[in-house]
Image 1 (tube, rainbow, N blue to C red):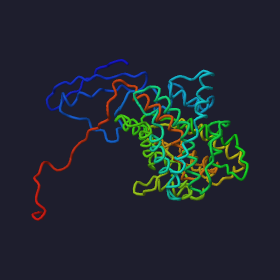
Image 2 (cartoon, rainbow, N blue to C red):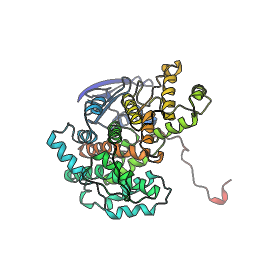
Image 3 (spheres, rainbow, N blue to C red):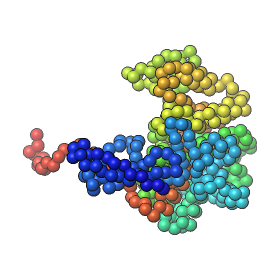
Image 4 (spheres, one colour):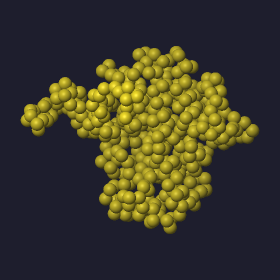
Length: 432
């Protein structure tokens, strides 16, 4: 890591302040302001941390201006075309694409640790029948530390490795159990003979009284979605995992915190919001009216699934997922799906509208993912849970990187205080 120096001028005193800046392998320089308070008695102000590097990481790189997303240096498009989810998981965890023997060993480990403690299954019966699945997943993941005492010493690399395999293996089982509880069906146990996504589909849709045949296109679509959602740099939920983990909390608690952060509609719930928006628009004839509403600053309506906080160009994941959306709907004989046709027409009209072109409001990954999930029979309430399954890999990779960093410190953001200055206590009977 190369060190640069930046000079900042204090306009009140005309003093010159020299700050070091770190130069990464790619991307913008990062100015080290850790000593700013000691030198100037001032903090930086960056609401939402939109211009603050909270850590050093070697996992994922995003260039929002150019529409670039890379895992460990590999463009996500190449991984989506040639790889599978567990191979990408190994890449994120270990930094390199695994050899054949390494991938076989990793896959075997994951697929043979998919069962959860039987007592954990009973936990689901404590949730109300209409509890949101994310509430169940967050609660059960957090409780897993009470069952796996043998792997919660975060200072032990072997324990960290065991935890990583366990949570990646078991999160689909937890998710499927939450779904089955929500619809009143019996739990379906995982099968070691199935692949990661085929096993998930079986746990979701199989029932004891009938045979269930896994659709290979459905499994392929899930695998692709999981690759595209596996990691996305220092987003809200990943930063939450890092912040919670920085306290030394057990890793299951840190992942549960990430699940809770992902639950927010501005984060993991975006694809569900897209679907609800399309249902609100209703027909292609109504698209112009809603586009007009979206451009009206005084109208609260917004086109969901367009634009991205990071990507200022086309979301590189959107092109990939659009093709899969066509493939899935063609496979299930639902190419006339009104929501999909509506989505295509909305995309076409928005991208030919000067307002959206000038503001570079292009479709993002959420625009199509919800339609795929619905086509596969996955209800809206489970969309964010599916996101959590995929993102668990990224959370674990970042947690491991943070814990292994010898210079790591507990997270402690500062603030700009604008409340009352010091004042004296007044007895309750004397207050007016």
